[in-house]
Image (tube, rainbow, N blue to C red; front, side):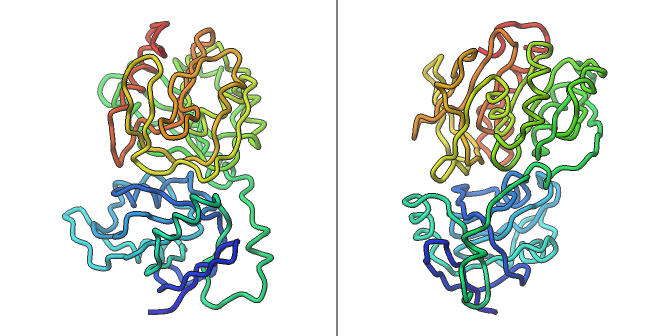
Length: 357
């Protein structure tokens, strides 16, 4: 086993053991608190450009199951306390080490992930590098930044996912780095989903006369997607629109809102979200480093807030027949108690003016 180092931008050095691909890598260091679902974490395009810390101490125990992939991996590195090289699961096809090698992702184990997480929570996300000898200078590490992330995780492909059973609606999903689970949930509700690239023009969407539009999740700074924001502006009020994660942020920006970067983001399957129109607090799956400033929305209404820090988790725009959520209602790693959000979108396409409420 080869020695590896995880070096943080603030000078912290963690020594551990290398596994996965053997290559040096620099990325933005973040943590996720999911107890299960490391396959979905590894294959979520929203982690583009980042080195991910798994706070749960044992990773790899049920191996790799390709049927559970959310997409292609764009991680810059992977950090775990202990990795299991002898997985046991009847669906397992191979182990996590092989997956990381195949995808070219370096990893390090045997480090204190509790201490690492505490550092990030205290100081905020920062750059880090996985390497095999101590670097002579820190310039590459300090100068790294994530740019054009949506373009990195998407291409020009357009394809159709057919409805399960009888088709009820035609939905256009704009792909900013979508998770496969979103498409699956729509198809299971009778939607024929046409997945289009982020470079799509509003006129191209209008030519297909969809019943509704979904703005997908994706990575990076939402404000840098200026062409996508302009496209959404042209679609507002013409079709029912539903935004998820990055799609939620882009919809807010198209309505004159402002986004900002969180100190360490929300990543994991245990984020509590309070519904402001009722008494429920839902446990949700999230993966984002930016949030919408609620006071910047003048033609919408905040419907969900994070119960930990009070940040915006959902907005509806009644006059525009549009709404969005910051969390992931498809939540393939669980919990699934916000799947009803998809039903609201279906109801909205069916003509229920109050479906977003």
